[in-house]
Length: 438
Ligand code: PLP
Image (tube, protein in one colour):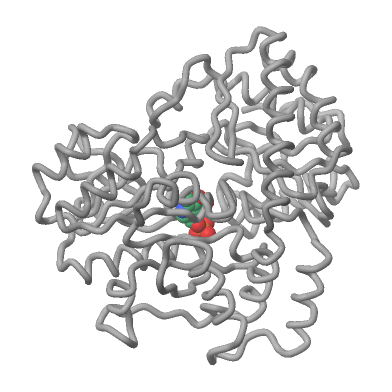
């Protein structure tokens, strides 16, 4: 792809990207940061404050990525920062139990469906460990996931659908053994019949079904009404565990995560839940938790092994605890209102410019699809006009708005997105919509 022209000076980012590519594959430490989907130079960020990012060339952007979800309160929140700075003065890692671990675990138990929780350092570790636990608990090997749901780079979850519905999957990337992907069944999202067929065929071999509580990694695709309840019930009837991946939605889609929008209202609970992002307050912290009888199978209480040198790290758990304690109803209502304003303005600008689009949300999480019909699964998400998104993305970036560099991502807001930041986004939208129309 040719490099899109930009009105901003990005010389220092370009220079750093060249240096980075010499020593790091693709110049980045997580692929989507590289702008491969949209072309151009990723901006190297020097600092962030509230809703704003500043790059090494001195350009300022309203941040609609929020570190891919974690920064619910915005960047460098003074109270989170103070808690972290105070904790750092007492040392950064002891390899022993600590106070903030207990307090953060209590906060998670109080605020979600889980009865016990174990901390890890990334969402990937959380889903990987939850699956091992489900296999250990049930004595079964097969797992079900949905196409378009991302659960981190766990071998068994980087699997693509086999040749038909309810067939075993194939590796989704080189390096994943067939023996690992072959224990996974990949189904279309929101498809009850496919789930029923898979359980009919493999029921007594299925250890667990894992799903994003509301998918945000193919753009935001809300579960059809009752879909998560149906999954929980189907798993129960078949002796499999239902794992709800709330790494992205947890404490983000609502104060209680996606579960606060369905399970808590409808009266059901997942067997296991994975968390990450917001609960780490911008630090590497994640967790998995759930039913006490299942969690008790984990070492050292039970036989299923799981461990981590930095798990429950005192700085990360301090940041997470400070963040969750500050994540009050006011925070969620602010993010809801800000989201409504931006969604309405995006819809108006894209409609005026004649750009097909559909905006979807689950709680406070939303994304804009560059197509004109609703998206219920990954194959529909893939029908987007990607060149239109590329033009839109670069026009927004040029005007100081940092959107995710991929059409398949949620747009994230924080409680620090104040009137000035929101107005900056609104001002950029009409020209970006026109750019997308060309
Ligand atoms: N699960 C979901 C739903 C995610 O969105 C992600 C990351 O984006 C993960 C798991 C993996 O988390 P991490 O990147 O911390 O390994």
